[in-house]
Image (cartoon, rainbow, N blue to C red):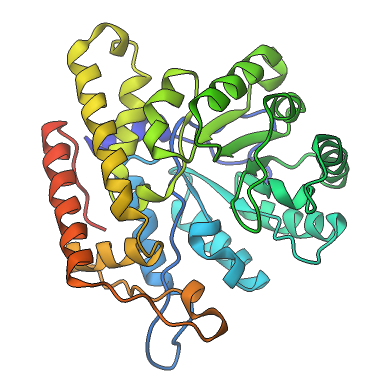
Length: 356
């Protein structure tokens, strides 16, 4: 079953260390990959690359179309620039053509557009699309014209690079209007868009606006970050999912998107009911997923798969002398209950719950 799920994820190897801007990314699920860290010993706090490799292989075995790293789930703002580059390079090497990889290229702060463009050029050598954080092109939230002007400048500074967009909530969530998203899609440069508006009406308007662009936006793909509306966005032309719960049960997101994009889905009430059931599980389980995330994902994998030696340590919580989150007995009960439910649902859908 895992191999069948993976059929939609085939991604030809790049001709210039990345996908040409005219070649679309595969439809499906792009987990926002967590970054494992070594918790103790001489290398405490460093990226745990053996665990990174196992995570990558797990996502692929679970049918994921691609991987998004570094991203906010990867604790990207707590990685050094050289770590971001090395993490992206290592993941791409591990993937070895089996799925796509998109990596964040802009990190804001005091960086100018020119400086962000230079780093984007570097990380683009490691991935299939270098992702632009939308708020970094309008740091003071001055409006669509400012964003569009800065985006055009960024495009001019990165000629030929395949890019993506991410409405990241940090440092602030810059949600793009349907008109602005359609303009970006029409440039032909953006292959990936991670949408975080979490609103069905806005999503429908965005998807319609992009569809109206026509052939110029043929390579543009819309990936919903809001798992509660993944069935809605997929039914309205979305390409898939890119969100945090794919770090818990990635096989189910892959299954849902693939099933809904199957030609038989519209005429099969059994499949429609199965999708409804999986969507209901996603919506309820997200309340547990979000508690102490991304440590919750690491704790889930550590305790539900005892042979997987991942640490729940997060740099995000260690920042400025902070403490790591404590998982109470109730937290653990909820994580394990969620695991049992996802296994039951996977078995009913005849989807393999792969071990990381």
